[in-house]
Image 1: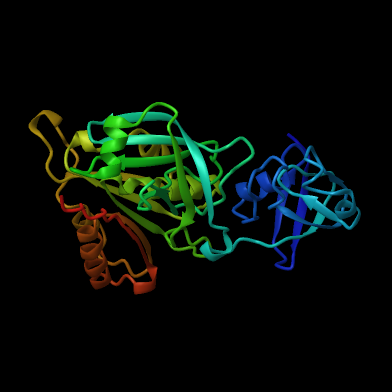
Image 2 (image 1 turned 90 degrees about the vertical axis):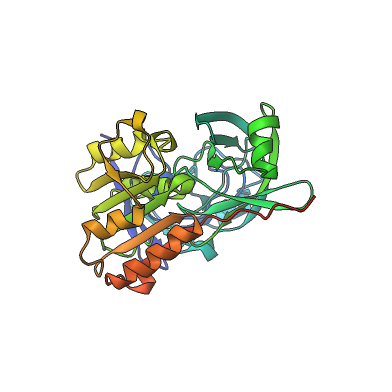
Length: 342
């Protein structure tokens, strides 16, 4: 096992461990410490901070990003630099959505999967020198040529940023979704603005979590859960994923695997209209009702819910009646752009 060192951050006083064979940024992300970054390969300078004390391997970087006079003044890049002893570093930390820089970037559609007839999963590749920093659960806006925007949650966790993963449901007469399903060519180029939104894991809480997803509302919740497992949270977590029929449960593999590998995680799929050929033996009905059936009180919980506005509204109201505090209900309501009149 690689040797580990203690990293102390100023001015927060936060401390974490970093192995000799990983970058400071990698170690921080692994342990839920939010440090700024842009490219993760020494090309942009977003992760720049001050080496206050300790023995440091600066790694490979572009000289324009860390000029010799900056290095002499104690500056360092934490996305490529590694510890060679215990370190004290001065750096701005990311505490919430307002701390993350919103950027406009181009991307290429690297791959498209269609796990259901009306669901497409897009994997977007950024330019070689770019990475997007975001909080698990946030979304992006696709910028269309006519100036309009379409919002989609990012389904990948921040530490898995080789591609940006979007789950897109086909909307009848939807301008952009029809383009995705019927017209988009391989390696299509898109532009987006991100990260946006305040739907993200509140890591300062120790409360158990109830996740409620409706349809492709699973996307940001997938990001949040993968991030929570990556930072080794020991909070109890249960995911209720509501869909109409078995075909709409388009990505059952990951949550089933999370449940197998993590005793503090439970996965409960709920189908509202299972088909006879589904031979469904699991839970049925509305997904919020499944939560109510299982919890006499939600007073000691946090809830993260994502789906159609009607689902969000009824969940908020009924969960509050079960004792859930207003400030412990976090929601991302999926709405669709109005269809223009002909």
